Each structure stands twice: as structure tokens, then as C-alpha cells.
Length: 95
Image (cartoon, rainbow, N blue to C red; front, side, top):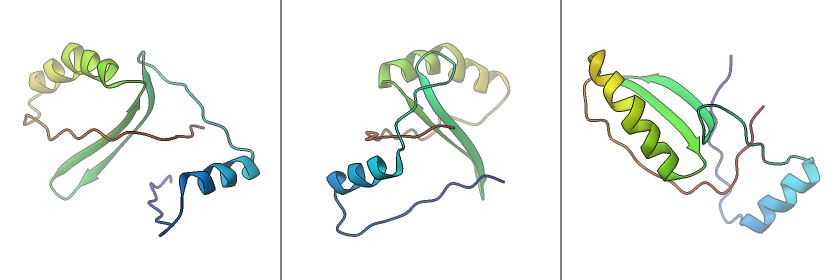
């Protein structure tokens, strides 16, 4: 079973992160449909669901949301509108 893990390195820097990633031999990956989607996961919460995606740009997400997410979630009765928060992504890895 996969898990999402948040790890906090107090006082760490992005330069240190880059060094660690280089030493591990890990490089960013960019895969996944639909166009612009790089990574996706979802989990149940105490009061609903949480979806986390990484997209190439906010514009890619917005286009997909308007074309697919909004009408289909309304169609199936998902309560809305959802709370949507955007975060700049420094790096990501995909299997």
C-alpha cells in the first residue's frame, strides 16, 4: 500500500535538497495523461475526499477543470464548489 509522507527538514535549503537528489541519482519525471498532468493521487478524509495533482501549469489545470472536472462532478452530484489551493512545485518524482 502506498502512502503520502510529509517530511520537514528544519533549516534545510533547496541547494541542500539538490545535492541530496544528485547523490541519490534521482531526476524529475514528467509523465501522465491528460495533457499537462504530471502526477495525481487521492485519499478519503473524515469529511470527503482530497485530490492532489501536479500539472505543468495552472492554465492546463484550469482548462481540464472547466472541460471535465466541473461538469462531471456536478453531473454525479459531488457537492461543490470545492476548495482549491495552488502551490508552486519545486520538484517532483514519478514512478
